[in-house]
Length: 175
View 1 (cartoon, rainbow, N blue to C red):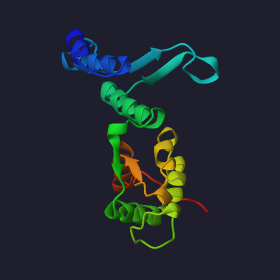
View 2 (tube, rainbow, N blue to C red):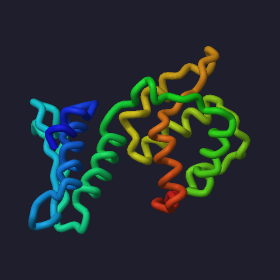
View 3 (tube, rainbow, N blue to C red):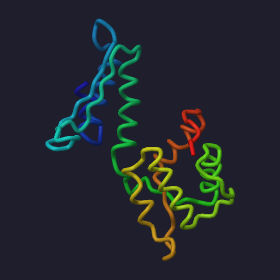
View 4 (cartoon, one colour):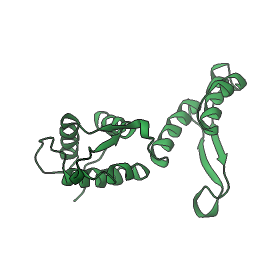
């Protein structure tokens, strides 16, 4: 566990998660797996004056460490900002793909033409808010298409949009 912690890059939470995974792979608790938790405290970092920056717990689960990893990935997706190196251009192909997903999900009823304009940008930011990618909206919203800037999207957000759609983990939008 110590070696995994020391070798892992990233934040304290990333390193703690790597140590938990390594401990599980090395045999873990002699009683077997049943629960797992990750708590990182930072002064004033949580809601309502709490200091809990990351507080994820898994109880009574067949594979609690794997579930904790999954929940930690979602925590990062929903509660961290986009990193500049993750931003990618929204090509015509990506725009069409998003328009198809939006149409299927009942979020969009326009043409599937791959046009990336101010309307597309507005729909994308609205959709990102709908899907709880709130902390990753600003880099999309801040692009000035009228000044010739290229619309960009976070690769992690796009990958998750695709996975949610492909795996059917969505409900049609109620209008």
